[in-house]
Length: 445
Ligand code: ATP
Image (cartoon, rainbow, N blue to C red; front, side, top):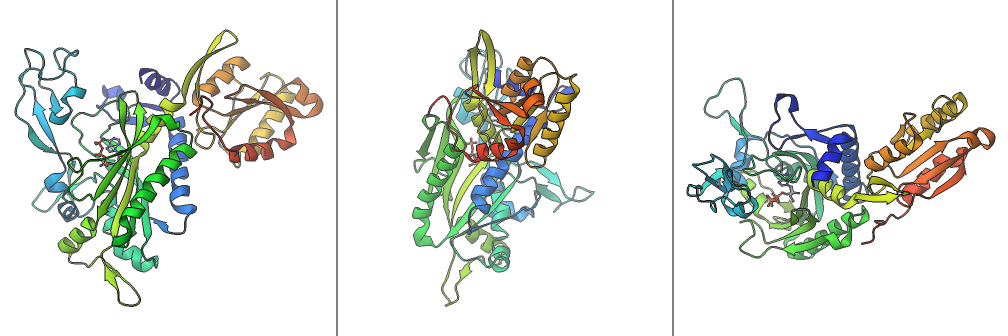
């Protein structure tokens, strides 16, 4: 994990937030390549969940909702973690995660294990960030930053049902920021206080909920494989009844083998009719489906929910590789080509050669219309390749002396390091085809 954090910083993917003020624990800012990576992942999710299907529509709901939403959802009362304070070191820990935490005085021990530890009894601590709506703090002005995007979907159920003319089974999907005042955040982006969720609520006839629940576990697992995570580092873990949330009729975690061990990447839950029933009760607006022949029911809900942050960590861990090539070490991020921040680099071999520069620039101008490409004429060619390897660019096109003679360029493959020559006029078509080809993790499954 340390190597990945340092690569992310060095190459400007992600850096600690508010650094010039000493940083703010577990908040991060995304730099250029981080933003490109995030945008690609969002686009791939959006394609799979919405564009490639007929039964899911998009939504972008507000971050700050009516506070009653969070009473109805159970978050005001129950979105809590048990917390203990240490009177000696003044640190706070999650009572149920002591074995994942370090003692403030003796980091080799867990809190409570060192002789000086003095832990309080566990108290329930609500994870929602509170804020005030309007210029003054008064009764009724309290609101919350959403801890999940799902509730924004449930409260729009009626709008979508009417306006998008849908009938179950159908889904509503959205991507947006969520906020949780996590007690023990950490492990880089894995557990942060502000993260971007991608959630989809799939409304189904009650009798079909189990089938759809299984369907969505399989679909989401297939999405990770499609975008190159290794099969051997993914597993599905079904929660036992004691672990499930109060509303859940079934929950499975798609887990990834992170450096901290098997941990939740994405959750898929069968939420039953809990959410629509509660919002009907609290808002007095009936949230149900009424069919053309008068049949009526409260749909059950299947929810796949994940954060971009957890996907990013999994993709970085999965794709990170170090190898020695021709006595030189290289670090490479083997991202799936449709996920990689930069699809191709255009490199004139000699930066001072006007002929090469002009051909390279015109190829760059042509490709940038449709792809995320980078022009780089800075430094020795070997260094430029290594830079592109470190940000995970799958292909580099090099313009050299031969280009001036016969209008061909070299394409270098990030994973195999194979080089082949192609006509410059065919590069655009070659790249379009290469992006459509199946891609498998070069290190096997
Ligand atoms: P955990 O048990 O790890 O706290 P959770 O079960 O509370 O997670 P959910 O409420 O199911 O998580 O949230 C859905 C998804 O949102 C998770 O699978 C994860 O991908 C993501 N997520 C939740 N909390 C965080 C966080 N603090 N930082 C980054 N991603 C998060």
